[in-house]
Image (tube, rainbow, N blue to C red; front, side):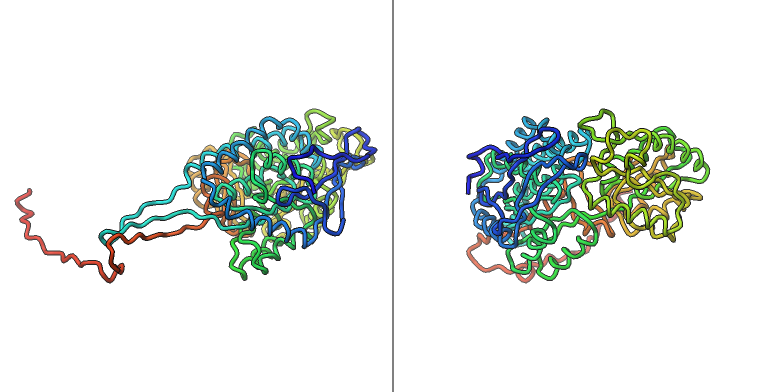
Length: 542
């Protein structure tokens, strides 16, 4: 085993077509670089160029996860006892290192998951913003001094860390989301075991290295690689063994429910940020050009691979035909390809082959529901590609943008999330019908409305059942100091980001300090004050 700070990245022999090196990846447990206990490995490949292998990583076992959990447990007392401002300073160092290495991290992320360089830049910046925000929160981890109802007695409240946190995030936001989780967790004094996304292990490895280089003590953040059914399941099952105090998960609703059940029966705290079928309403008073741009980006940015991507586009019948026509002009001209080789593309490949397979099941759902397809031909191949596709389609995992119309509330595709570049369009009779449709799916993550009628905007933001709402903006977007999360099938009410996330990674500790030198019992020893009826002559005040 090698200490994480004692070596640079190790490279393996590779015949990558772009000449890029292949990295030997490791778990990081108690600050040491380790392999899987049984020697198992897997490779990370570029979805835009499948012959490009980024590296080989440990396929971690249950024993590896348990070793990481023990390391986190051992590191917890000292880290929890570290003054919060000092913990904040380490977090600030992370933010500055991310700034220093931003360009390299952006290119690494774009290569590993296929997102555009511009989007990856925005995401690394979100991780930086999160660090800088929580650096200052280390000096504001406030409790309260509370007046007692008894004399010579003081009451206090303190925030205390939960303990060991298990962190599981998906690969569509492989830098911002783990920082949303781990930065407030360690700021509160917790330690973490991070199961990296299966499809972005190299970026996770690089980010974990940055964290340690910032001065993070060994064992505070431990990284294990592997798949969901192996390392991920072992991390969740550790709740049954009393080895973890918190699970924070971003992913599908189905998996989130399973994690919630495991945590619930063990009284382990869970943060669940799950899927969405995010509605966007277009009203007649909207600025048409702005609304088309917002709907287009919400539906097809990131190849639709966001939990906040547009699901149901709900258009008022008075402007329905015009809006659809304008939207389709943009959809048909969508520029698709590898942003590392082609400028100006809107989106790149699917995150991996399994995401493409799941997406095509969503296309079948739309067909079987009876929706009408007006654009989209499944997978992009050299024999089946839009005019604005760039490159050799056989090199990567690319999908057409898809649009379905004549969607109604009784269709399965109206209710179910389809993770990829696909929008379902619904016609609304009036505002009340549009609001009803926006609330009709089982999800409640993000939502949006385009209107220049202030009453409509007010009624929408007060009537929608969602964790987030955009007014004259798309369904996507987040900032480091604003709460992120949903309701209904989109989560269990916890939030990422901002001061609100502190609630998810700490508990309130109430302390009463008896200074009287005797036993005083609240409620029983409080002197009663009798109220005497006043004989004031109110008439004299006239």
